[in-house]
Image (cartoon, rainbow, N blue to C red; front, side):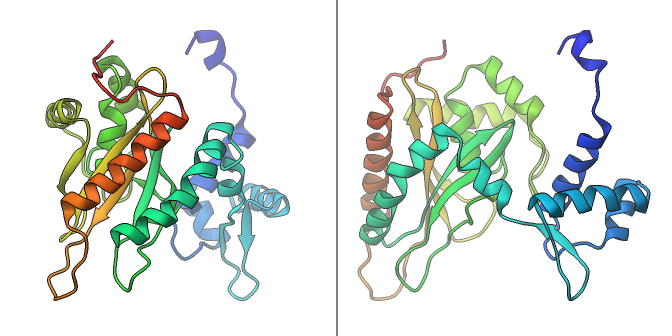
Length: 264
């Protein structure tokens, strides 16, 4: 950023964004006083900002307990982005089909300004499974979604991603050397298959969706859970084939390139 651009600021906008970001990590809503205290602001200026955010529909105020929480408007606005809209239009109906074949959940993630965001999620159609909510922000360094999104970028682009990234809830500090070891392995095989770094009993199967420049614009992730009872469910290798084929189909939709990725 140049010196010319850094000397300008928009305090009111910054206060509004601070409130939105704070509420995004609050699971049960916050009072006006709690918000003011957390942001080290006066209650009067927080009140004005909250009133505007409520009026515009980005924040909801509960009448019962006078707590403020985020509405779904931000999520709805994000879905209007042309790349996301086009991807989800073709992906979600297909996700419903493959989850029935695989007996496993499916979600898709994208990177946005350094954050790893789940943009679509379909639960397993059966009585068990693990699924992430659309709109969730997950880790870069401790998830297959984040690592695969990073892997198919140049090292310079990865440096920028690491600089922009803010740790997601529960995500440990990223060791760059260890992270780059993960990246190198993913680049070699073209996907991620390894035990989850966030929960026990789950194997992450993660496949990139490429654009024409061989950059992973999104990933398809199956949090595979193995059955140990007598029900004959698809094996992990069978599920891998299902989800890899799906990712390749989405790549073809984008006229992307799937093979022989090399750093440019």
